[in-house]
Image 1 (cartoon, rainbow, N blue to C red):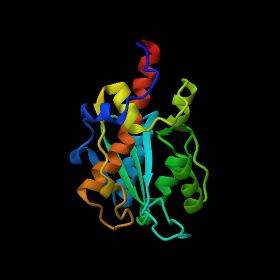
Image 2 (image 1 turned 45 degrees about the vertical axis):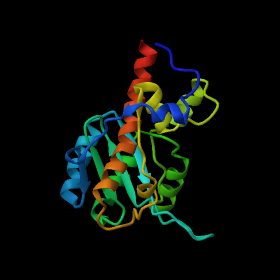
Image 3 (image 1 turned 135 degrees about the vertical axis):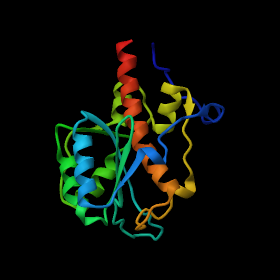
Length: 201
């Protein structure tokens, strides 16, 4: 099988069937040290996980983001949501980010990594940015999650702008926020595996 030379146009993507992502029963919010330990054990048992972050948007010129407020890690079956205000999970978050045994895969992670460095004073290890993966395959323009899902799965990934710009610093995230965040990371791991399968075919 050969990847399309160009990502599909927005109008073409809009006609596709929806992409089936993770739903609430497959999404785990880490809220204490015991849950953090369980998340660490399950995630470290994987070699590769999808990864992304969310931050409360800034609307004032010159305002500096205090993100990331949410960090999400996903396997092909479930996602773990970490919130920065939960201090009990910080040690686990840092261990996951710095681990070179666990490859974290995401889309357009440059800004995420800068925020992580500023907030946690660390440099994450074993990061794969799918933007680079597609560029290595000859794509001149950045290929985001929506285009990648359309190309590899022939499905439409829907992202709500109201959720994108919602308050990610909230102490309790809404169901829509949880599903959005989890599937950002889930899409990344699914695309990574699909790209690998294309190369084997």
